[in-house]
Image (cartoon, rainbow, N blue to C red):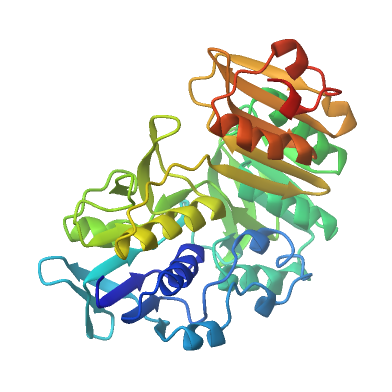
Length: 405
């Protein structure tokens, strides 16, 4: 059992690790370092209810300050770790203090990929990652008639749905030929395109951004690569995220699009563990190395890392799942679809309630569901069990998914 544990990065994973460590009887020194001035909070609502003004900031908080006080956590809100020294087992903070550790957990998360185009620094161009980002957007909404969203992925489309619900005209620019093209099949993409257009969204697919135009320092319009100009008051960029692995990489830890961790969530340095969006790990169930950006993965990896830090040897082998809320549509994805060789549709998109099952050599490896709670719940168990459903039953929405095996 280590005597001193330091956690760097204060998000979902960090909060869960604190809870697990104390529940497992860790009674030593526990320090949590976070570069934001507040306790860890939920990020998924930022692009939805918080952006819409339907959720107060204090409702985002995962566990309030009293939790950390009760669990005897030395919290360093608003402090950034600037250097790791694995040989001496020290974490150096931005004000010069060095924190010693016996075990270290990195939960440094990710950051938005930024535009590198002319005009990218104009006032009125925003990203969605933290409360401060969304507060800046909200401050401009009253004067916003038309917004342009760059990127048709989860964040871009969730923001689009929120802005439309607020009565703002929205144009979405997406370089690919369909929305969410990296994460869902074409059937699901086309359904969501239809739903957004039905609500008045202008979707420009296969359209690249050339530059952002301004009057002085203020955004005025965006120019596409085909020369088209779109006047707008606000731009929100959602073109993916990058792992915050620079601290680990500079300290000599192995990284490749994230901090490399083993099945115990341990890095290449035995005393250092990592969890959440900043990690790259081989998923034992699917046999592929992935960096997962989801609350569930952050929670599960942090729990596994905390157990291993106090000697409870535990393998991380969970089936991942993700979700996205857009308008009244809840999409949940379970599993990983890489390598599939067959798709089976359950139900029809016309009914706003359907599922798409991914098979690989007859085995159910993933599912995408839209307003189909029963399917996604059953799929978690079937995928974990390497189930091979009957194809005829699988295609029949009248047959419960759990009964297709």
